[in-house]
Length: 245
Image (cartoon, rainbow, N blue to C red; front, side):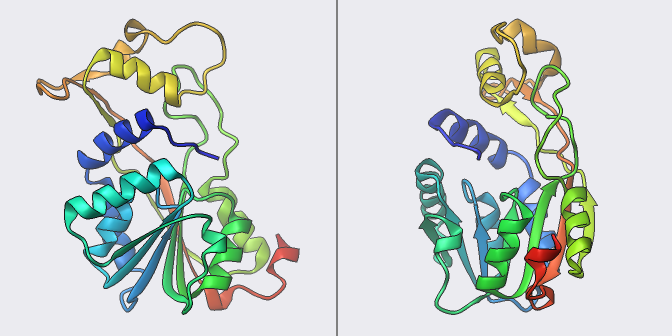
């Protein structure tokens, strides 16, 4: 499970504020559930997708189990003056709404088995699942394979379970703006999955960066984020879906 800390929150907020990744993702999702009034972003992280959705649907519930992420989410909602976002701290599986949601979003949220269980229990409409569409770790200095469940893995599982779905793939820019070379080294120390004992130094990461000419963020780590978006209707999840996976 991804675990937030204060430095990760700061770096991810910098990236989220300075790209259109979440705005474009919300715009695409809006077309998946045009009639939805109540949408839940399960495992919402810092809340940038939830806040972008809140510009497009009447009510958004944003759930995350990390206290660090939850504090950042609440601060973001206050800063943007959004009155239609309800932040919740806790396990999404244990926070079932009194009335089922019209739609749920699971962006980089755990395994498909957990997603389907929550969606079937808590949603009466559309579930949108966002998964990685790559198998190499993006923020390692070497070539490090990922064991995470990908969009292809999830699509194969949905086929086995006999659950109808649609899929779209995208590769938007979601790089990392950096305030200094020291921040760049910190970023790789936090996010990389390189093995070995060699310390990550500013010199080691400099070749991956571009210079921006911006005084606040003089460096940028360019990176495409390939994603697969899978859309299902919870009514199409059969009672014996667990046995089929």
